[in-house]
Image (tube, rainbow, N blue to C red):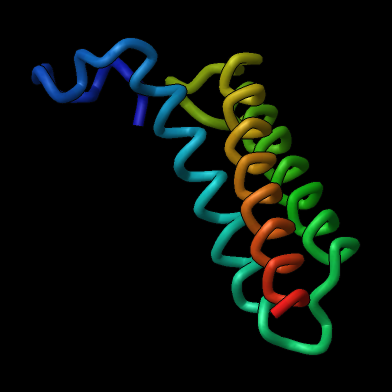
Length: 104
């Protein structure tokens, strides 16, 4: 939904609320996808990196879809940066958890 359609509320008055939503959504997407593999034999740093890169590419692609195909949506480079930040934070959490799990 376009930012202009978000209802006015104190909750949504937070500075850069939209960017925090992007960080949360793409971080959660990366975490949930990676968590599905965390306790399997397939889990590895390489796999978690591939997941994070795939989520980042998806975020970039969605911005271009908004630019060229979506009505009342726009391309925003800062949304891409927020998507990348969310995915990288989740990637770090997955790697940390994976390595900690291997030690135990």
